[in-house]
Amino acid sequence: MQIQNRFDPSLNLVVQPSDRETHLALYQLGFQKVAVLPQLLYRAVSELELSSLFGALCQRVSEIGQAMSRYVLTRSPLNAQPLLNEFLNAQPLQQMTTLVKHAWFFQVLANQQLFFNYQPIFDLNSRRVIAHECLARARNDQGQQFNGKQLIDAALSMNLTREFDNLARSICFTSLAQWNQAERPIFFINVLPNAIAHSPESLERNFQQILDLGLYPDQIVFELTEVEALTNHPNLPKVIRQIRAGGFGLALDDLGSNVAIDHYCMELRPDVIKLDRRIVHGCSRYEMKQVMVKSYVQAAQELGITVLAEGLETPEDINFCRSIGVDLGQGFGLGMPGQTPLGATTEKMVC
Image 1: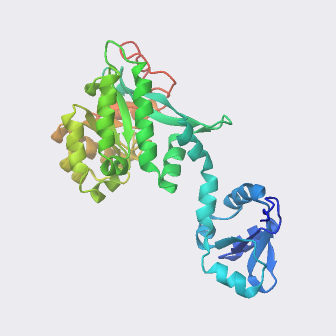
Image 2: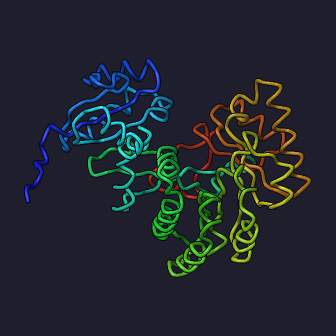
């Protein structure tokens, strides 16, 4: 049996570009027309070149072009009928470019290369640190660092939100154990509703892990992100009750961006709502933002819910939020994220 040489250039990547822009990008990457089917472009490539070529396609071809263009990898002669037969099973170019684009994410999950920074949360009245938000970060073998948005975007693109969320929580709790002190610092832990709704047993494992590490439930506030998806999960209220029964706190993120206070706060009654930075930033200068922030504060006060303003960067915004009754704040104007939590009883904000 003859073994195919892995450097055999007879391997062809054949693409059917969806638009003129994609067509041009492929030409620039060395593709040429298939003689018998000029609507298709091809490039001879070795297996070792494939990853870099798909990486280049990620950069040169728009996301729409990647989604609408189709491709096949073939060693068959570029004749009309065989090629047309193979194109019956052609896949969107995006299917492969997504895998290549987020290859680092597989490495992060497999090697558990997550770590956390801690952003202080201040009581705006006492001006002291009362908690920290745990911000997931990752660093791959090459030393490249990835932020929380990149991690979540990759998890969503690869349909690995549950795996990412479960791993992040487990590593986070292990990290928190080293900062546990006599005053029991409070930590906000981000949770993806999709993940816990589909695997509520992971929360049970977390609860046991917290106890095993010597942490206490009242130190942990589960912060639900992307909460606009909450209505899609009928079993999520059960999970929320599970969190409550365990003695943990509950916060809802992104109020004022894509989350309606009237529905989620009435249904879930969180301990804390976080006002999105998009309405907080510049709230001291823009009347419309002032009206919105005041309405959230008033509604929360009537429901007995604590209000936390995100994205506080200027003394003016900080003072405005304090003056209208916002309870807590976080942002670069108060304190930057760091590799270690600040001391709750000693650190005080400047403003």
